Length: 116
Length: 110
Image: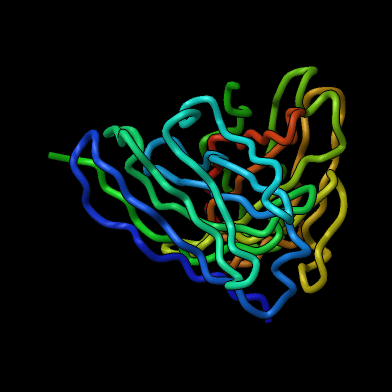
């Protein structure tokens, strides 16, 4: 059974940093592209970033480009999202997901609140 | 990249069929047969129910079906059941390993 477990969310001040993690099990992690998708109460789902199987390619939505960094450690079956210079509009539930041509499996999410 | 356009809400009675539309532009929905749909119950993670416009993952009921015409994709749920009450989101590939979601549709089973 595919299992994705996110961690690392919390309350952070504007301009601050946070690093999310996602532990994977039940499948061969290194065989899959992975993604982060976030959900805000008012704006629904938003794709945030993707990373290739070996970590050699990364793609971001424009609104986080230059502030967020996606990475992975295939030896640890883990995905990460380093979030810097956080803004109020980054407040959301953050999900990790496996990705082929769609988001096949999702974790339960970790909440991030950016507020002073 | 603007979000795909979905109706905010739809409703139907048990046993009926409903259709949720998802309108994009020529460079996303209109260009790729990579439209997917997700079902989300309150407090739960989204679940993939349709991919590549018309395909259903293993274990998803055949009551769910998808289609596409030009820049608009559609999700049809036939034989509505109480457990179908949820939020539904469409998603399309937009090129260069990027994706865009719709704003979501709340389905109410009357």
